[in-house]
Image (cartoon, rainbow, N blue to C red; front, side, top):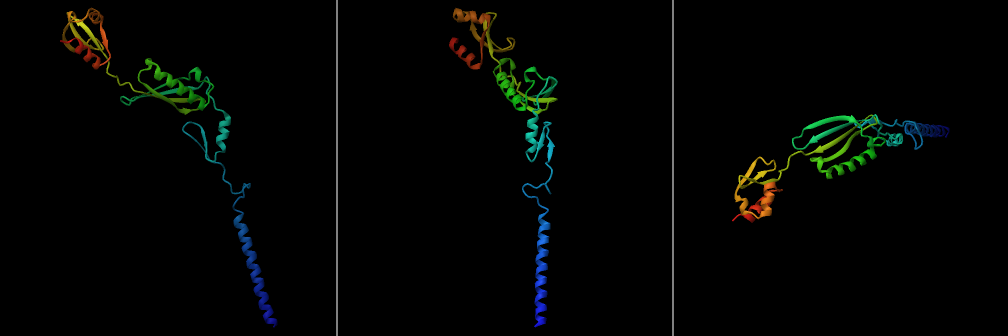
Length: 217
């Protein structure tokens, strides 16, 4: 009887030791993982510097910090214009002081100002070939603006001129003969003949065709 008691007690003790060992091992493993508020085992926030010279925080915490810094352009900010011509792909670079109207702006404000100015330039006939512009790089020290142009010359108009009593069609330069008609000034109404003596402009070939069709016999 005593022998049985000893054997039973041995197994009970062994089971208790095993349970304690399992609990201790589990606690040791769990200690390697932080709870929601714990800092143990937590990696430091990762950050990188982007091509724009701004800080990119992967965990998002640094983003708000950078935005809070409020990076603004200054009177000392340099501006690089990269001009690309779609006609042949040529690229030209121009560096100058940032225009005064762009001083004191953050990135979002500068992008908005460039969009507005770009729309105005599209409507301005003096900026022939301009297509678009946008901000490519931004920092308080330097900004880069990419401008797209297309300088492919569109076909110009035509001039109807009188040469030696004959009515001739010249290209826009008034030197290159485009077509020699059989008309003379006497074949035309007086007011039309006067316009041709002064140089009558036609925007395109269709207008030239309609003119010739109207007065040719």
